[in-house]
Image (cartoon, rainbow, N blue to C red; front, side, top):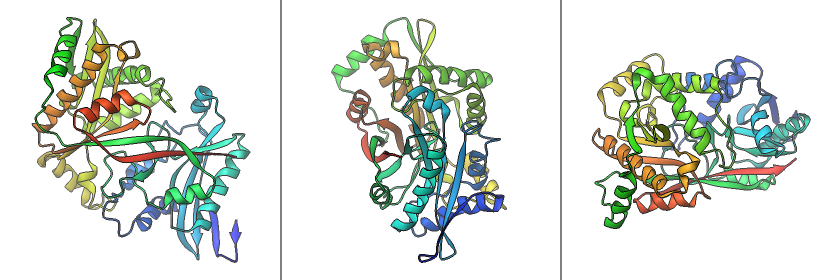
Length: 383
């Protein structure tokens, strides 16, 4: 697809060289942005490989790069996620990995390519960004550009929203990230009495993850997640293959204190998962591990306390969510995770992402001293 007057060309990603261009293009888009953290290339290559990432296995997808005057100027991926279509019946195909120079013609060409292909696949609207699905990186950053992203969270340019909205996209939903500076917990007396009373129930118990039974423990996490999050916007459950993949990815960076389980009446009822912010350790790598950055990373992981942590997942099973004990459990797990991380040198943390409609969780976190500092938006438009 060639626009001779604008020297603008859209090329499908077809070769390994194209895929490397697709990945590295973002480094030019964010040149001069001190808050951009380049993802490790080997990790992103694996995420984009359907043979290695079960989230995109057997999913129809296509990627494009925009070239302006011969230089890479933007990129986009389009994907049809049948699991999403089966669950939500909304006729939506997805776009993601959107990066673009501040040029409406380039954005238009990329979105047109993705939209035309999605229409050829039989979908009726385009929704995103999903990189690759809702259980990976999701949303377009629309506020909070002045700080770097935490692990597994996207960054963005402030003009991206303008580019998408000029192409007819409108808001589907917003999701918030909250920052939390850990400090000694000053729990109001009334709330502490409520928590203590609810958790005095002998049916309630807490424990940390058993690393000797790691795969089974991750299955317990996902079993709770698939129940607790099932009513959330865009939710799709993890498959067995995705659970195996997730366990393999998480094991190198998980410590026992960073996964808390709650049992109710002998059954797993809630969990909280915290990840060390490895972005803080790789910001100076430029996405490269070779030749020597792999050794730096190993040394940093072993010898340096990671001062930032992110809680990407927390869930309480639905049968307890609207009961006092469910609220008390959520409070307790956050406090346990906070205390464990503060004692190990964490000075800043993020709780993300949380749907704008999840008023009960937002109220609880704001009440504990967290504050909304980034907002991510999902966009959609009819095809």
